Image (tube, rainbow, N blue to C red; front, side, top):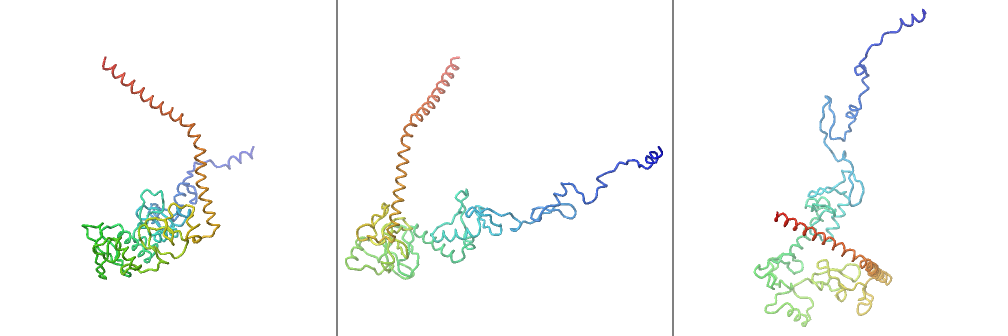
Length: 349
């Protein structure tokens, strides 16, 4: 009993403690710890007084962006964003895209994303940053050529080495007229680009030159017929530096033979090079020609088989489609008749 008395006297009374005040300074609630654990890349952070201040975003702090061309995640520092549509692509893909479009003679370099709703077009400064001054000058030259081709009141001087744009008379832009180049003082026809032929049509003048044996006129581009030939459809000069004999004009999309200028628009199997003066002059091996013909025949055969298989299905489905349409029409007619009868009943009452 004494021991119990002594033990009871040694126990101190329980006192209420404020745990929030007595808690050590290292213990912080989860909300405060989440606020203090803001990374340096966040847009907001905490200052010494406990308030927020805005942290400027830099390309190093931004997350990587998915390029829609190469499908790779690229750091924001190596991303190009088009000004007009705000679409973002990696720098490497955009450089290759701009170089390809300029090499193809594109008038406008649009956004490479086919699903872009804005369809933004790259500006001159963007092209210069991606391709350099040399590609920009090439692109501007292509644009000027295209603008002159579409303008009925302007034309190029055909004199070799003279790159002057000459003005035509706006009163008769479609009819042949004599044009005087202000740079080289050359008189030429606005239609055939040959020396001016007073009182004769372009066809008559060409026949007269052929009879006289003047294959290369005094006015025009002096070129070797083995290296440069004119398109038989639109007449634009085409230079062949490599490749096969099947040529396609970039201007009018006409397909023709390089040697005899015969049309190949409907010659899918390239039978033109099986006989005649152009036999075996295509420039491809016999195996590649046979493989090409096999692919073409396979495509046509596939469409034929698909049509043959789908024809019975269409015949079976046709009555169902007709019945459905008749039901819809009958439902509409019944509804309109009922509505008219209700209106007549209301009028009688």
